[in-house]
Length: 364
Image (cartoon, rainbow, N blue to C red; front, side, top):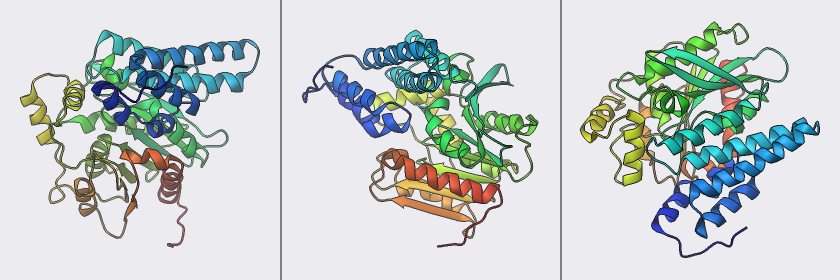
């Protein structure tokens, strides 16, 4: 492994800020691989090359283990490869051929986790929405939680969260909604003023799947980072949402100041026209005087989050019933609480269990 160079380029410094060790491991990378990725990129290896090389080694490890009948080890290596490829594609903000190829490899690695992870596809408009369904090991799911990300991390990036939920008897559907994952990169579905219609299609899937039941009051949604805005909007318009978690989201989205973030947002909307980007962002403003969240709401906030200040998230609380809304703040929390991942997932898993499966716990 190469040695880290403290004198890194502005590009590498930005990548390390956007994808720190805590985020890499939160989204499923082997801690040793995460350290290597940061060291190799600091030493000059391009981010996408370093991450793809790590994935290749994990894929080789997975194949050897499978050939020798060590299926648990194989699944572990496929998970690590899937995570490495998720981060490899993040080197590209725009939808280049290289980004699509890396994301396709990520999807293939994730598919190798079957039957623990099940691929889902849903027709929507002129394209297909994609995602991953994770079921509890035994018994019928007590409820279902649909989880989605934001501008750069989607779907299987939240497999660790899904495992926390399935361990509690909940099914977890990791959604790649409009503007996300293969739904965007392969099928051309983007964010627009009616983006919540796309996310509602995942609720349709849960209701239609006999294994999940879709019983009223047993479907929750969780939006991470920018995706929390979509989750809050869906909770105001779709009565099938029985509980909602918002984690690190802006209530009033704006065109970012930094070029890479602007490129990410433009890619999500499918245009380089910044006037069109601003038009969509304005339509997605969450106004607590106009939008009301009638189901229980859990708002998560990190005190050191540079992307979503408390003031940016507070409107979601004002839109909810104070008797059924909960705020949880980690004063030292990073964006979406990468650095408190285990505690965060335990909290949200228990909260969804209480509100969707009928097991309330005494306050305090």
